[in-house]
Amino acid sequence: MQSKTNAYWLDSKDLIVKVSEEWDAFALENSSPEMLSNNVLGLSIWNFVTGDQTRLWLNTLFGYERIHGKALMRPYRCDSPNEKRFMEMNVSMDGKLLGVRHSVIRVEKLSPPLNFEFSSVKRSGYRRRCSICNRTEMGEKWMEPGELLESEKKLISPIKVIYTVCQDCKLLLP
Ligand SMILES: [Zn+2]
Image (cartoon, rainbow, N blue to C red):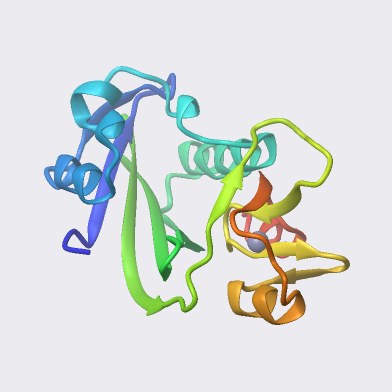
């Protein structure tokens, strides 16, 4: 991964009005041409956030920042099939715009790789996965990818998930 920090800015209606210089390089690195700046500028951020709980979590953070104006930082994960990516999200007001910066703090190899397939609607047989810490719910526990593999030897990849926010991550809200 080349680009370490990626940022976007929202107007008061949550429309993406600006992205960082590295944005397009980042989209291409992640094989997401649909995320190139030309395709996202002018659109609402909520087109790109999956799961009601995740939207609520993010919206609370944005709302708090707009009212209090004191920069906020929250850790989160953005794992790929082969890597655990430890990230940080910084939210701060930039004049009238809300700036959201995503930075990679460190990366750990994930072996064997773990693939997830998500559904945006609740379905039977789908497990809950936290979009903030990327842990997956197994019985009563929220598990890291490594724990998942240990707990269930015959884990079928891709693991079918719906995105939510776990209790621990709800506590990260201001
Ligand atoms: Zn979580």
